[in-house]
Length: 97
Image 1 (cartoon, rainbow, N blue to C red):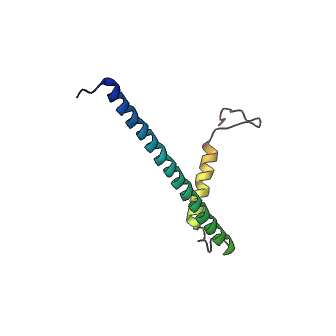
Image 2 (cartoon, rainbow, N blue to C red):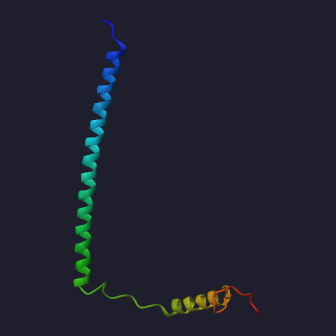
């Protein structure tokens, strides 16, 4: 029994077609699953946001530490003092000392 080139190519073409159909089927199932998960995530987030808004916010926030606030002000002052100097039009100018 001799296998001809034509029959071998026909078998490969059928196998390729089945592979393409399988890939398309799996892609459509995967897309549906992803869309379903996004809808579930959307509803979960909506419920969580609604709950936070109805309960009146995030609750009690910890007060600012005065030492940290002083350090932050000091750093902001240093950044502004050492930063690039600009004239009122926004152009950079040399620092005169």
